[in-house]
Image (cartoon, rainbow, N blue to C red; front, top):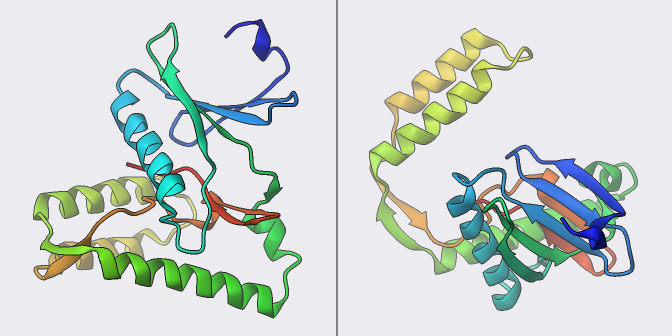
Length: 195
């Protein structure tokens, strides 16, 4: 990075991507791909975030604006996005009242309802569902906090009851967890889209 980026705060995300806060008056977050191999997935994430911002697809949620994107000297993709000051869900949940919680739940419900309305419905390929179950199993197997006998039963159930009916297919966040939510002054912001 050039000398413009001297006052930085860097954070490594769970996907391996680096988040860089440029602590000057520009209030920009730079997200950099974790590897050349990850670039294709990262580009899809950039495009999805940009699409959500431009088309207001959050249905009650806002999205940080993608300001620029490019490739660095190491052939890693990057994007600059709007910095959103606000609270994490854990900070927010420690101070909210019942009405705030009800509003948050309604926002989530409206989001899912709207996305189900505009989705197409297709029979999901079994190999994709099996791949997802396998990745969840591998992740959960590494936990020291789970009852692994119970986990074995749940995973067995998932394998034995693969859906054969049509499932909704459409644009979605990809990782809609509370940790990917910022409670900003202007509303609720979705961050960290997945392909």
